Image 1 (cartoon, rainbow, N blue to C red):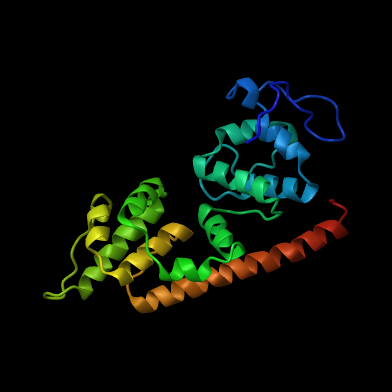
Image 2: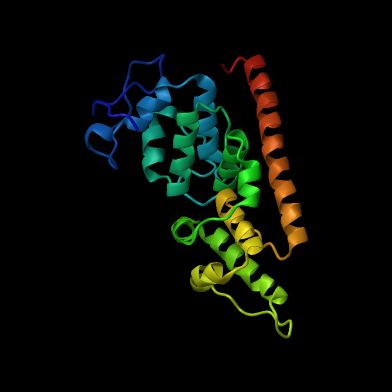
Length: 232
């Protein structure tokens, strides 16, 4: 975020009054997100407010129709992955709202034209360790379950071998390239459903593509309705 004065900004371009002091932040960055929010176009503001309200994870402002003067307060209290998503909307100037980290990750891959790259390549071991440690717990659970399912394909008696989240780093190191591609894709997209076979991976990729395309189409239609309604 850019450096900004510590003096709070107006909470809307139409009003010159100031929101109440923010307790969670201090110094030159205290009002950075509020100021960036107010500098954005109205469709971007709408996307930020809607993302805050519709975010699926449990947090203080889930389901709350947030007054604009409390934007900085909400940002300061947001979980890390929601903060990343709100920053993403501002940085890309993308007037889309997201309900979870997976939607943002999938759409960013789609928007930047990296779909084929992500679907066919795997992370080096060090990169996997870093990405895995930073992943959300549901994604880690799905990865552990995926490793467990793929033990069926290992040479032996065909029995499934238990794999914990703590064993994922070692499992990735010894995994065949096909499985590394799947695990890397799950991390890149924030996929939190176990992938138990090559056929399941094909279905998962197709589903992720559909989500991205439908997201773009739905937002184009939604913004058209918002404009007709005089929202911006």
